[in-house]
Length: 68
Image (cartoon, rainbow, N blue to C red):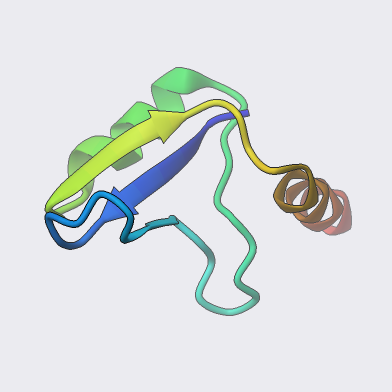
């Protein structure tokens, strides 16, 4: 699974994962190509793809995808 890590400032410790604004679940993609399309459309200070999501975040992503 791939997610997008975003920085809005130059501070390296001030980042967050791209999330759904309704339920705060991390947006995650199974294919790197799909995540890169979203990554290119973002306008922020810095953004990068990450492959290692926290276990609890991954659990919430899977639960949301099963409900859909």
